[in-house]
Length: 114
Length: 113
Image (cartoon, rainbow over all chains, first blue to last red; front, top):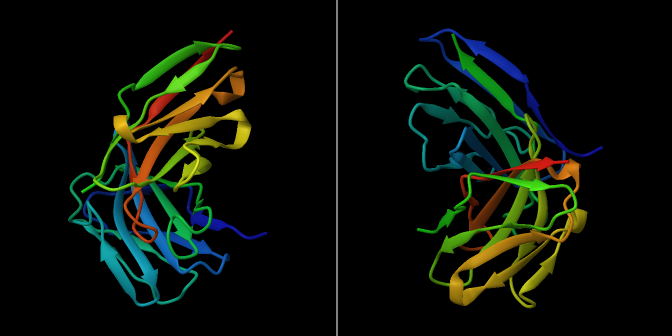
């Protein structure tokens, strides 16, 4: 079945460590997105990529980095520069944009800094 | 830049009662409008979307939404709520087909017997 997979579901990190969240899709979608969700804040865009080897910063990119070396993969690294990384992270993909076909969201990764 | 406001943080309704969740957007032209639903600890599922044409759009699970340009609103409605509708609901807007969605802060729906 086609879909988008995020791993791990839960992740714990010590302060000062970088951590990478995985996002893989087998839908042959061109565009992929990372959102951060905090209680009462909705979803805020971190980074997005519309084609391989290209990505753009979203509204809250500071302290995060991404890569898009393969069409199916869009990993997110939460660096030690991110001051408040504890949150629920959602990855999404679309064929090209959010209007052409239904966007698929992963099940999310909950990151906790301990 | 476009923005989305969901005025109600939390709404409680009785099972079988009608539901309306409010959404207001800020954008000059006709935006692309969406409603998504999220169960606890899960990803988002698209309920419905509006791009153009008929201003009343039907979605999955018996939901509908009406686009009102004069009020910059895109409210979600359901005539009779089921306990399984308890979830968080997000309104979202995009300025064009290829731009990322901007989400509202969400409305949490609780359903009581």
